[in-house]
Image 1 (cartoon, helix red, strand yellow):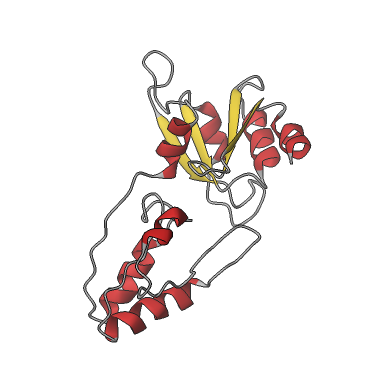
Image 2 (cartoon, rainbow, N blue to C red; image 1 turned 90 degrees about the vertical axis):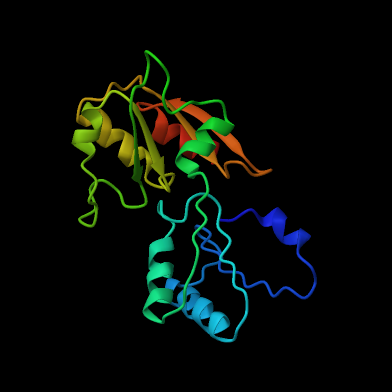
Length: 188
């Protein structure tokens, strides 16, 4: 999920460990990532955990920092700009705009609204009038849209789905809450 193009600029002696967590693709367990950070730091290496965005916004950065702290290994966190702000901006959507949206809310959509593991209050979110940014929600987008409409958010509320934001593969698909499920399916 990090800026992969930067890897091409590294000198040949730099060891790169792919710690990807690509949806439906390559995946390195968080415990393995923590163990690799600790192992290489203990070996006296300079270790960089390169991530896109802000590692503390759905990035599990605190888990990594805590694992290092438990082992007495100091670390420095350099936060980036969260994808919840940067990706909408990259496709021309401000998350706030004078007279239109005076608030924005960021939630995870990786758990469907009707899933018992969900801790998101979708009914409360439907009552808000600002921008709602749902990260990791493509798979559940139809169910999320339906839950918001059932709770009172107008079905004609505009929606943009952005895939691979800020990368060369970036793609934007527009819909409304009422058409989101069928649009995401139709657009693949």
